[in-house]
Length: 185
Image 1: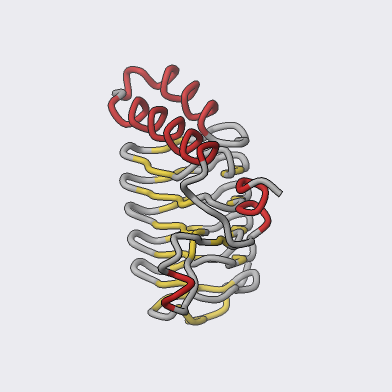
Image 2: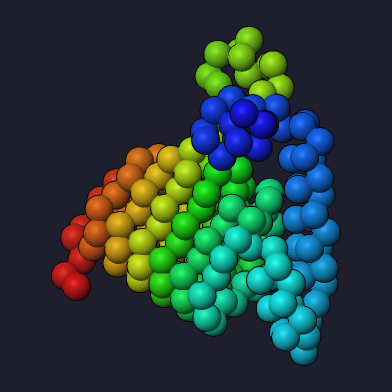
């Protein structure tokens, strides 16, 4: 397997592999261009966003600045909105459904490292995919950790640290996040 195949499979991989370094450079070049464009250049910004992310539905709106590792591993539904300062470490696939809203500075991390010092210091890392359902609102400064699945119609409170998966129709918050209450949808 190539290092990229290992990465996408969730296996330990070498992030300094030339193919991966080039892919991250491509993403940085694109998001840096996106981040300096004004609202008057929305058509150009949309074209660059479509080039950056793996796939997107209609009505994508990302307020700059926006940051990601690769971009190509991000798959978005229709009517996705990301407020200022969002960061997606898309070492593995990140999927968002339709009508997803991210508050300012939301952080989504698929990337992770071994707990054991020797393995962590090897320079190798791994990742776990993240899936976010339809009609999800993620409050500002929330952090979504690797391997998480968020159900449909979920609201995540500002500043929450999501360390486990949650089902449909709940409001979650805190560190670590827990169900605050069910939502009657």
